[in-house]
Length: 45
Length: 210
Image (tube, rainbow over all chains, first blue to last red; front, side):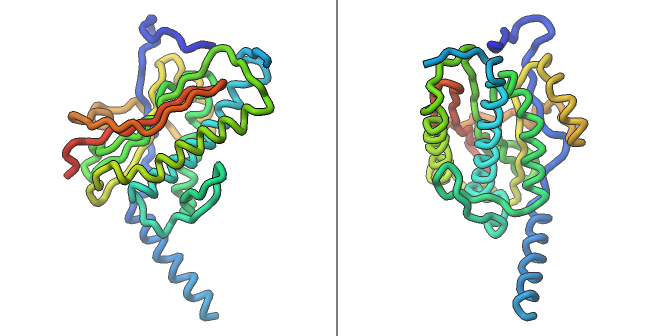
């Protein structure tokens, strides 16, 4: 169906966003550091 | 040349699949180019026949996938007017908005053999524009995060309810703080017109980022 006229009753425009946040930069950096250490250990084995 | 309605061949679903796949690549690339996450989590992959940077962080990838799973039913029903990737500063105020403005024609006139390769070519141009957009944008302050906004209609939110529950990924109405940006600078990046979708991408950038 074509987009309806948003001015019609009960059909107003809304802006939504996820309630949850993405992982923080700090959390991702920690993961990256741990992965690098793990890969280093694997090389030495 | 055949004329199809959106109901034929479940075309809305095909368009939503194409757009969500594209948006996934675009979001990864925006996060890389705008340095929201460390570059070490990104790996070079080939999409739309061009190299792109995609995250290999499982939690981030799942978050992006869950987001797009919830947006897909809206795109399918032509109820997503805009999908916006917002980069926010430490205080959760927007510093940049990558706005994907989407509109789909009610009737489709397609030549099926050329359709998909043509759309792929058009989407590739968007990807290439995103990958060089840092040249026209100012640096972001340290410690930025991101979110995804979807502009829709109140009545259309019903289409999202089922998938929100299945994915345990609820959505809420955005606050003024998450939406408002003071005197943004508008930078048009790319526009496409195809048989199945029209889309334009522009960036709104806050005048004072720091």
